[in-house]
Amino acid sequence: MKKQVRKVIGLATSVGLLSAGVALAPAPATAASGPTPAQIAKAMNTPTTLTFWTWVGNIQDEVKVFEKKYPKIHVKVLNVGQGGPHYQKLRAGALSGSGLPDVAQVEYQYIPTFVALKALLDISPYVSKDFRKKFVDWTVSQVSGPKGQIYGVPQDTGPMGLLYRKDIFDKYGISVPKTWDEFAAAAHKLHAADPNVYLADFTGNDGGWWNGLLWQAGSRPFGIKGTSTVKIATDDANSQKVANYWAGLVKDGVVATDPAWNNDWYAGWNSGKYATWPTAAWGAGFMADNAKSTAGNWRVAPMPQWSASGKQVAGNWGGSSDVVLRTTKNPIAAAQFAEFLNSNPKTAMMLSTEQFQFPAAKIILGNKAWQNSSVAFFGGQKVNQLFGQISNTVAKDYKWSPFQDEVYTEWQNILASAIVNKGDVPGAVKQLQSSLVSYAVDQGFTVTH
Image 1 (cartoon, one colour):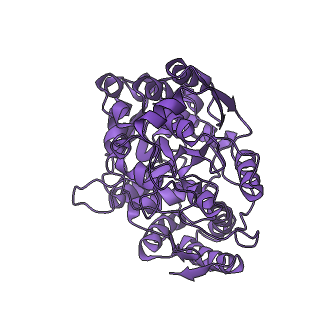
Image 2: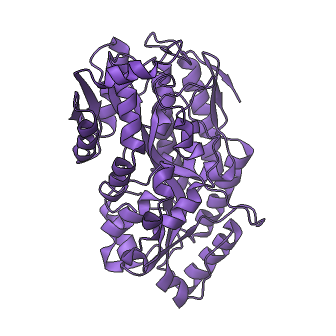
């Protein structure tokens, strides 16, 4: 479980791919065939310096494990800025063709952006033959191209579950909702019993959270076809289903509509204003850090389901990969480093237990000691085990746009107005569709629905 999480914000400026003179290319820089074992051994025994851009604190400890095994290779770790500054520097380097590191951390939703900018190396020739078996299937899908390319090594994830206040549920006789219909009924029951308490907060300032809800509901709003065709369907049937659901709760006044990621929001957790948080695995640690006065009162459950069939389906919110940049002069060493960092038993466990990342590596998800660790903040519950099970239910076919930063910016602006306007979330979804289509066309894309 994560105990310390800093929310990562994406690109702060519009990518402007085609207007910047950059054409979409689904398969940049792929080697015709992979290196031989002898070539790999030679590369890993040749004096080399790799530069690694990452925002993960103290990751130098994991890097030292790699350097101990490969003493001829030195990895220079740099934090060039978290969120916007990090991505702006990567984008600038991609456009200029210089100044890029060998390896960089990139969140899953921004991989299509940097593929489109021809910034990423297809590392499929350079990683191990069992690479795809080392990580949760849906994370491999997130870093893969349409023709078998591999554009990154999965590092951490955010499978979504439900954090809930057991003490509040017990006080008001509320059962843990297994479906979204039960969730809505519980929201009405709780708020009627105590008008100062809401079952949840429907926040309007986090597009990542919204996309996680869409992911679970079966919405597939984005896709890239060929070199310049983009699918935009943010108003598809499942998106409208989610929008109408939350709009109803907002209209009835049984969920809060407070902005997230500020002191007032954290105070709401501590005061008991919010009785649940539908969130990612990393949210458990974030909650523990920011709602310390409520320790022992929270529990974790799977997300409510849209169907009562019993089949569990989850969405994902967050997570990142380590990519190799196309300009690297050391593709073998760079790819080997990225794979080692995130799949070696020692370093992958360190990322989970010291940096508190929720793992993508199966070797950690299947580790019994890791699974069985109990968390006092959640009443001794085995949080890792539960979120590990949830991770296996995340659908692997969710795609992103090549301008996801614009999607998030537009969504935040549009939804904020919609919430003020009596919670017109369905109208916001339609407005977002129209806005993104106009943006994509202006950037030179052909748009399909």
